[in-house]
Length: 391
Image (cartoon, rainbow, N blue to C red; front, side, top):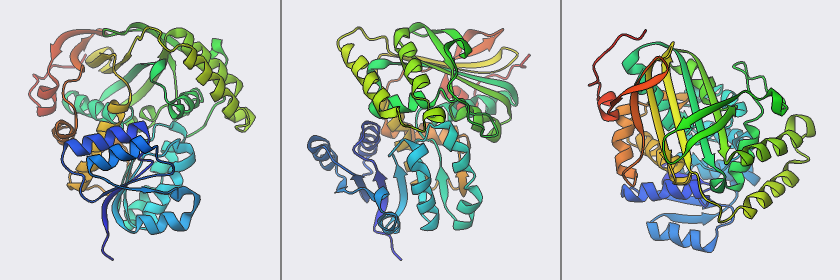
């Protein structure tokens, strides 16, 4: 049966989905795309139509039959409707059953491994399912691969990030709480620990962010990086700034822990955190930062970024690049897989088509755990950095 659409985006009215659609529009690739949301805001719908996308109001997650019929009309479905621990299975399984390629920005560690376990079924269906193609995971995984492609096998990957509390959407608030439920490599999920049980680190992020407290959190990269790359261990430390926001978020996550309360306290806790954030309107911004160390015994490479920008573009634009790579046949692997399989050169080439330009990401050689010589990411991706033995 001929398929009507090139790509259908579910949850297209969300802020990160809108950033993705703006990226597709910048690339001039809107033809054949259908944007679906369960309740369009008039201004958002008008902006989406103005960019050149077909638009429909529908909640296919409420009716499996409707979802199946919808996916039978498209080559690729982009699932932007989180949280993925609630929506991921429904759309991925429907994509497998309808033989439709799939992409999402899943950042929930507890659902990542079960989604990747659909690999055999996806292969049997002859489809590609790219799980977690946002900023982190997404761009982080591809950067890590570019470093490993240069360095060879390494012992450790350490990811550190911090987000300005003003940038948290409702969905991001719930995801952040979910990150306090640590997930082991075998999929075991832990209850939210007490404050003294948190593993904390103080990290110096690039300007304008500066020193921030981060804590070990659950995220997909520690699960997928050792699975798809020659890396022994990977860790993820994240936080909110200012530090009082991190403490507030942890306290509410601890109180409303779904492992203990079965989700009964989640909505009231979300309301309390939203009230806290609204009381901070007008407070000075700190910004967002990220550091990725790829190393053996402190020798390797470091990626570092600091920005006063928001999260929407940093997540939505990589998703746009991933979708175009799939449509262009540059990701031709079948099965369910993480972004580590994406070739860095292909990703960064398409990223230039969908991005606004600029970006504050820097690359350094790492020696003794400290950054030294500054390098160019384009040279790393092109394989033009001199090789040095990793201690």
